[in-house]
Image 1 (cartoon, one colour):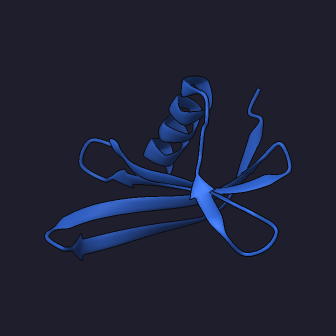
Image 2: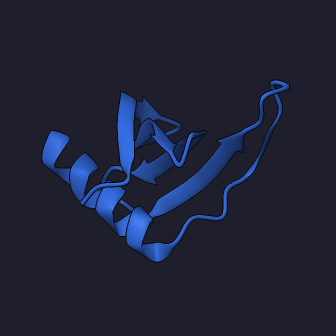
Length: 76
């Protein structure tokens, strides 16, 4: 069972010579953003957004990351 919901996904074509996919999602009532390199879906960065408008590097489990990776793979 998925414990997250993807709200938005952006594919950056040819940004700095590479393509990236960014997915914004909610997990346990928290908003996150994760960016993968499109070619191999390797994580580039992952952020957790705070209520005051700031963001921090996210600490997500491998299970959630793999699930999101598979979901993103299906969508692209």
